[in-house]
Image: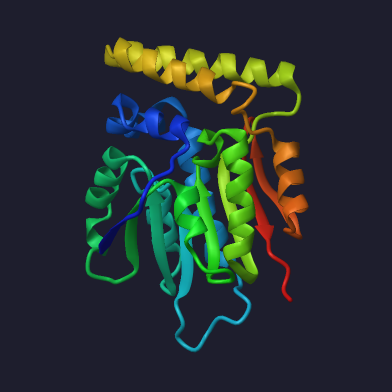
Length: 256
């Protein structure tokens, strides 16, 4: 298992959010937002059933994972199929340290390579038409909107024709009234969990992070996201699962 360092020209919102207490204890997300782990599971399930055009003859599929975090989605991808090799990218050192520990069983397989970099800088350095799959779980919503638009364009460029972007994430409801109600329910879950754990410090950090996610320049709503994928050139674009403000979305790069 290798680690690669790349010069960082980061989206500051993502770097700041996960280099502090939230990143150090990110496993708390499973308690306060169980849907996040389910999105990661479903990303792996999608890849398990996906047919890659031109695969075979012993060739490993090249998978780029955006925002690997502590390795929850990474593990699901590695378990989904044996013919993949993953470049797992994350900007936050505390998250990568946890991912390396969580995925230690994959050390000597040659199928997993960690990259400490902001996602956009790394993807810009990849050759066009060089990746079979770009996968992500609960990362895109952390990007500011302009940064997210840029990285989607770059993902389309680096994917091989017939390749796919698969993302399980927070896709905010287009109905803002319903979205507000869902966020209020989510906050109540935060208060219940952190009160039981006697962790008011983490309650504060996660609440501030949630409000940041909902800021106008930050929030990732479903229909605008689908439109972005189509405008960049992905076709078809599909929603496979939808649970409240979470969704699994695939976007394929048309074959030449």
